[in-house]
Image (cartoon, rainbow, N blue to C red; front, side, top):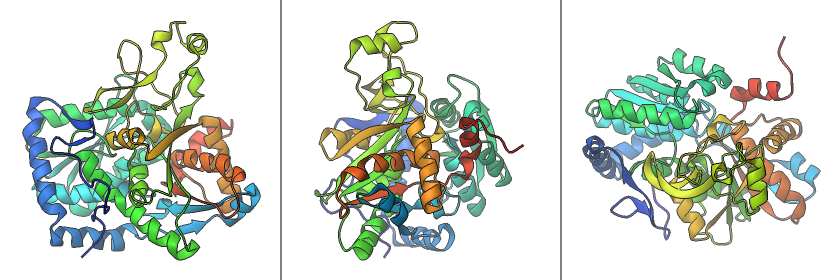
Length: 429
């Protein structure tokens, strides 16, 4: 039997009956969607332990997605930094170029088993949209993708890929025209079409059972990585590092090590222009200097300076960037996939119980990490993944050479070349 959906041994494998991880998660949706979510939860609970479903999913992961993804020892980079040994979990080598396909394919299989023929999804960096369009093409399902027009402009190649795969891409003009607004539009569509439509949420967030499902489908990353690092290095890593937007790639790799208390789990959020500027997407960051907050607020009023606070957001109770009036704050990141005001509820729970810690990397640090990995290892990482690499670049020189940092390279950077060129003031012409 496949182990791809097997839960960890001791860590609570599922949220409680209300779909909560501690006080976080749950369901906060229009009444119209409650029976729809009940239907999804019941179907997933049944199929989660169904040998036929598990076998079909495992077969496609192996023969279509390209699992297991390799584990690469970044030897030249480690030598250059002169400290800890860096290993990369290579989700960038999967079909479609990122970890997103693990979750999209699993949920598309679930939707087909439920008899749903119309799939909707949101996307920021475009990788979840591409993965969903890919799964729908494979399984013969109708596909509609919502994407903020700002993200469409900076991820144009992925928009074209989605359309090549047969998906309808609907640009979202409301709000900040980024991921948050794409999610809002997808939820509106779902409310209007609850009976024939299945919503594939792209990260470990949203109303129950979505954080659980996404965590389960992405847990293959951590399970593989744990086996691989033991085979290659002969022991567990000292630290596991992953970028955190909604949090799917991070919760996926963390899951393989949750019960290994000697292994530190580190999530890296988008620091944007710097958390002290207020232009970032670091939900867990704290600015204690009141004068600095006022100085960097757009209107000189500290109440407008974004801070991560517990609130209800897009179907879940979690930590959300808000101003003092409780309004959702605008976010900024050079990486479209991390440019999001909320975070998956299980990450908040892991932070609260002290099992994971969260830091941030700025746009400049991510760009530096992007170029460094290119030059020393011949690997072009996604800008999202570059945030995790940036944290490794900070930590490795301060650690002994027998220390092991395991970095989840969640995606490849083909989609980000235009953004990187623009940041460098370059063009192809």
